[in-house]
Picture 1 (spheres, rainbow, N blue to C red):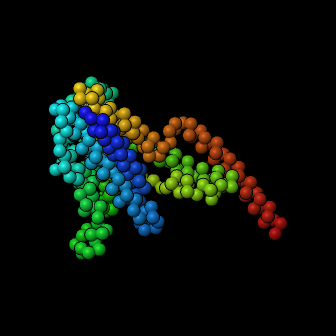
Picture 2: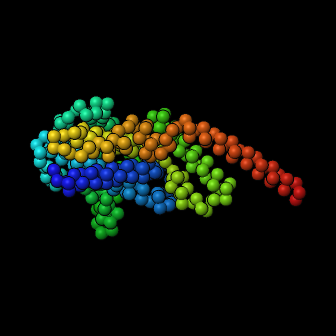
Picture 3: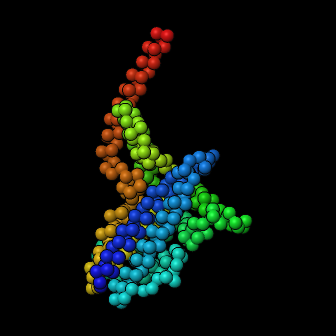
Length: 302
């Protein structure tokens, strides 16, 4: 294997991983509550399309990497994968038909080598493939000159979100994420840094919608399986493939709740964060009580 190919495998895996996790983060902000005005802000306008574009591209690349490396590990030659195009379903099926060349590498990850069966499928995979193939990616442009073009991605997402669910653990993490934004925002205002921290707060306070998180975690489980197949295929092979598991595993080799914690909400040590938040909200309560007393005194003086 040449150094150029080795470098290309590493760079492509890093790129695909970043694309995928960036898309999943953005998709958590797709509004699903009844009555939400979809065109109320830039984030609501295109969070779905930005997230789907990033996720579908990243998933496609990771699938192709996993297939290519599995074949290379067995034969010493990379296959031509251009015929798959953007057909996500076919890529997932092709990967599922492969037998990992070396299962001994990461037995603690063995449970993730089984293709996940998801209650949102086949609709979930069909939506990703429709978007990846262009019908979703270009639906707004197509609608400008084609009266028959369907602008349907949000409807598909909403239907899936209505059927999704999250665990109590994830629901608690969503609450902690919201509390973090409130606490940090209040502390910045108290320290006279409201304007200075405005850009930081814009990202931190971006709303997370529980039904969308449910869909996101289903999408995550697909990429976790793909990543584990890639990890196993490249673990100390005779062909000296790079250890691509070192790229994908830190991001994707987690339970659904831990992935949401570390890579979506980015909370980290939940117990420590909760303790800090409790202390912050005590200070906030004291400040609010002092403000109320001051307002009352001013009212009496008037």
